[in-house]
Length: 149
Image (cartoon, rainbow, N blue to C red; front, side):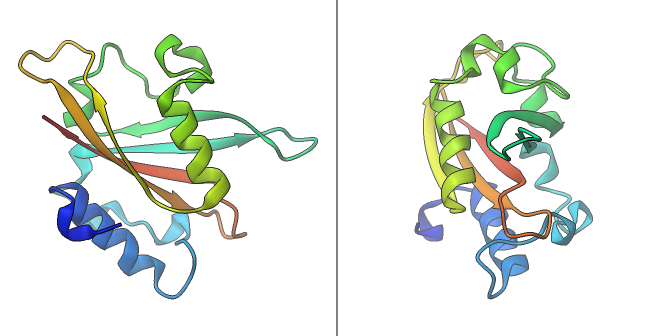
């Protein structure tokens, strides 16, 4: 992934994530300090990876935090909801598949999508998905940065 080709705020988010990662494969969620990146917060989504208690397999993803810039452009308020509750984001969708790949591989992903929502003159998004751990090495959270076009 070339940071030079990422438009802001995505490039700034990637550089911050990379700086808190250090020499580790991925940073811990506790290392992610929103106070350090105030201008990026409106463009972020924090998603929790939900696992089955019995076998530890991923069963869903839950929106924990949605920045104001993103929230204003959504069809509804998604904070607290699971992807499986949202028809356009359920298992089999591009969004679900991207979250699943980031969780499985522990690597950042960048995607571009057509925009479907209430904001006039918005035609698409570019999104970066960055994995975070709760400390055990597994991907437990994914921070997403969005840029609307």
